[in-house]
Every structure is written in structure tokens, then in C-alpha cells.
Length: 552
Image (cartoon, rainbow, N blue to C red; front, side, top):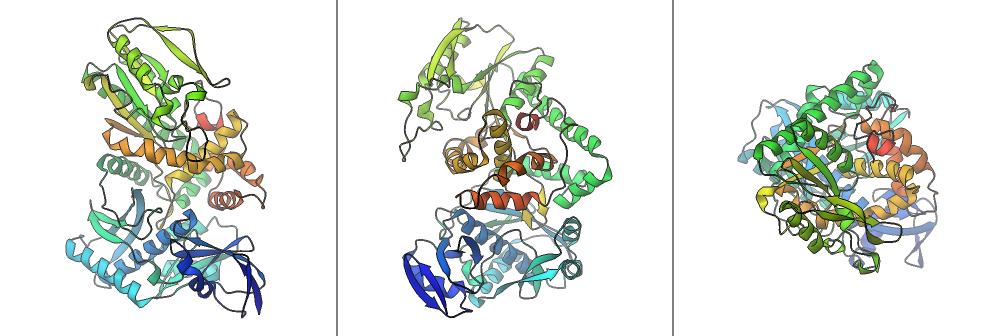
């Protein structure tokens, strides 16, 4: 018998009892389905069995790691359903999980088969059937050669390429009713747990719609985001054109010795897109305010500088303005629900003063602009005067740039709005996507350590609050942008690896941020590292690793 302490009470369980059995005893106490357990400080899947004494806590679908577990399991079920529905009558070359749009996961199917509504209905029916059948999802550790044989038999060339660079001698492989796959992270014990989903046809693929973490038992109406989808699709097509679809492909490039060429091609592609946006601004006519917004660590500052250079080549005279300089004085900053300063909300900005200044500038008046002193938390005036000439244009950067309330007094025709984000389109493999938030978090870890002396522990601890601010103040307005720019560089995670790993290893095991650090370290193991010496000085990546020619 094993003695397990749960919620301060010790109970005895026979050795070999699954954590799922224990979770079922306590489920009714939790607002959200239990997805995983924490046993003696280590996360365990529900299919695992009790082996020794210890302290146990539960993780539900409302926890980030529980929600990601639900997501992976649903994806595996979708892929299995596609193979079941098409059967042997239709050859499938590849099923790929491309990217997310809100709560939707876009999947492409490379096959001669054309997706129609009958097929989509069959996929939904098969997945619901799996839920009813409660099919076990088992995990087994295979010697790497045996695992690769399984993947090769199923035509998974992406897995063969990924694990060519794997240092460990064994691989954990999941099995669902005879279908074998590898997943980066935990899985639910059987198919009955994935009760809430919907599959629809979207573009030329499928969109798997899952619940948001805050409401894990509810499927909300899927809201298409065409601009975001198009931007992500363009990046995916560019990746495919350069034969870099997955981390395995990128590692092949690292080994090929042609990295300098890849750097130049990627940077040239970004410069081309920045130039196109600049020309669109000029061709529109009458634009005096370029409003740039994007989530944390999206490279807004470098992008603003590079856009300004492109505008200069077209005869404009750009002037950068940071919305942060319009912060209200620290004592007037609103507080969040925890009593901390809420620098992310619109009320933290003196919106009235900003509009007064911009209207005066638009009218040709001379204005003294403020500069916010972050040390004493006060707005100051230090002789920053500005007056707009005929070719002058203001490049305004800040998280509220796309919110019409931020620039309510300015005529719409005088504004050009740009949304920028690091929209990761590289996958670990065909079925394991890289969340955009992971790339941005790694960027911020490296930058904060370099420019602010902040530890990885502090950055990780602050990240949930940063993400909440983005969800409330940035993402709702992204589709209103006149242009979108994806700041991701296909090789950047391999560059950031060298800088991020030492920072993450500094987080101790007894600290709350340890498991997130461990997850990121495991993620970075997939990449072969790349040095930053060949990065151009104006690269967006330089904003994070250092050495930029701009003041970032």
C-alpha cells in the first residue's frame, strides 16, 4: 500500500492504482475536468500508476498545462479520424497542424482528396464515436531505432528527420487504436476526455475548434480572422518554398553550412515586406500617423526604425513617437485586481493629452512632446518640440495603437494602422506546432536579462499578466489593421537557444517557475544552436540578443 497525501489528508492506495482512479474520487470538487496530477512535485499523466508514498495535487483543464494536454489529445484524435474516414481508398501524403486562429487549429491535408461537407460531417461523427468508445491512449518508451521503424511504416518522414538529431536513446510513443505518433508533452488517458470540439472546413483544410482555457466545457462561435490567417499562410508558404517546414528541416540547414545564405534570404524577405508597407502608406496619400501595435516582444521598435528608413527612401520625413511617453504619472495609474499597477490598460495612458497634441500637430502647430521618466514615474518636458511639415509623418508605437479610442480625435484618413507579431510558422514536426507565445517568451527572456538585468524567473512569473493584457488590449483589434507584419525569423529560435538556456538553468527546482523553465529547456533541445555573429545589425533578432544598429 502507498500512503498518498491529498488536500492535507493521507489515504492509502494499493500499488498499481492509476492516478485516473484517484482523480475520479475528487473530480466533483473541481471546477474543470482533472487532466493531470502533480506527484511529489512531478507532473504525471492520469494513466500512470501509484508506486510510492507522496503528496498529490490535481491539475485541471483550466490550468495552462491541462489545456495543452487536451489540445494534443484532440489533435491526435482528429488525425486518427481522418485516416479512419479516408481508409485505404484515398492516399494521404501528409496531415499537418499548421497554426492557430483564436481557438481554432488549422490543419492541412496533402492528398488527392478534396475536402467537402460530407467528409467534415464524417470526421465529426468519427471523433464523437471515439469519445463514446473511450479508446485508451497508451504510452510506451521505445529504443530510438524501433520508434523510427514505426514512424517510417506510417510515412512520417518529418519524425525521421526530427529524431536524427535526438541525443537520447529512447522515444516515448503514443498509440491510439493502432495509430502511433509522437507528441511533445502530456496526453489524456483515453478518448472520452475530449468531449468538446467541432471540426469545420476552412480555406482548403480543416479547422479543429476547441474550448478556451477559461471555459473548458464550452465551444464558442468561431470568428474567422482573415488578415491573420493570410499572414500566417504567407509565412507557411515561404517556409515550404525554402524547404524549411519543421525543426528537422532547419537542423539540416544548420548542418549544410549554408546558414549565411539563409540569413540573407530571410532578412531580404522581411525588408521586401517592410518596403511594400511603406509604399502602401505613401500611395494612400494624406497619412500623417502610422500607428504600430503588437504584443510583447514582437519587435515593434526595430520594425519602426526599419519602416522609417523605407519611408525616407520614398521622400517622407518620419518621426518616431512612443505612446509610453504619454503614461499618466505613476500615482494616477489604475490598479489591477491584485492591487498592482496596471500599465497595460488604456487608462494608464493620458489619451486626452495625446489627442490634443496630435490634433495640434495635424493643424501645423508647434508642440512640446512629453517624455516619461520611468525612474521617478512622472511625465516630463525637456524641450522636445515638433512641428509637422508637408512630408513629415509620425511613426507611433504602443500597445494601444490599433484601438480607435486611443486616437479618437484624429481623422481616419490620416491614420495607417499596422499590426506586428512574431507569428511562428515553423513546426517541431507535422503534428507538433510551436506556439507563438513560446517564441515571444524566449525573446523577452533574453532581452530582459540583457537590458534590464531581469532574471528568467522574474520574466516567467510576469508572463501570465503580460498575456492577459495582450488578450484584452491588443488581440481584439488586430483585424482592424491596414497591414500585418510577421516579425518571426525562421532561424531565430536556434539563435535564442544559446542565450536562453543559461538563464533557464538558473531557476531552482523548488521555485514555482521551475516547470515552465524545464518545459522550455526540453523544447530547445530539438534545435541545433546557431551563433549570432552573422546576424545583420538591423535584424529584428538583434533587438533581443544585442548588437543592433538601432537604439533598442
